Image (cartoon, rainbow, N blue to C red; front, side):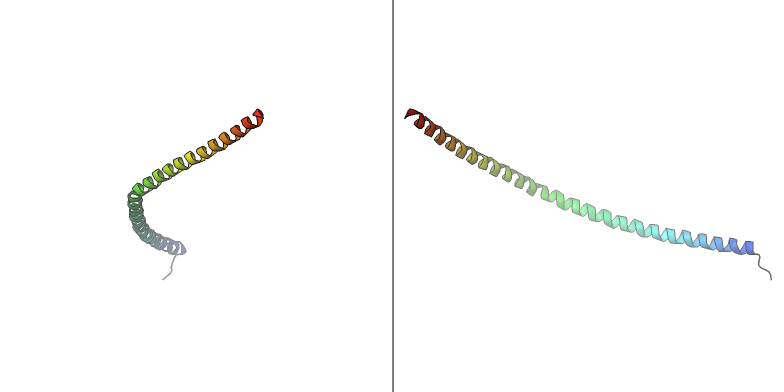
Amino acid sequence: MVIDVKELFVVILFISLIILVITTTVAMIKFIKTLNKVNRMIDNVDTKVNKLNGLFDMIDNTTDVINSFSDRIASSIANGINWLLSRKKKGDNDE
């Protein structure tokens, strides 16, 4: 019983290809399952973020009102200081 080296290599090659196809198939199935889990998680996060959009809009509107109020206060203070300085200069010029 003589085994030809060429036939042995062909058998080894086919066995290797079968193993490669099986492992690639298993890896692809696991990869698809992992992608499905990631997709569900992203959908869950997206749903939660959409629920928080109303809160973020409310916070944005509140900060806009506070900013407007503080701008009014700052401009009132600046106008008061300008009024006092201009009054003092007019008083200095009269004397």
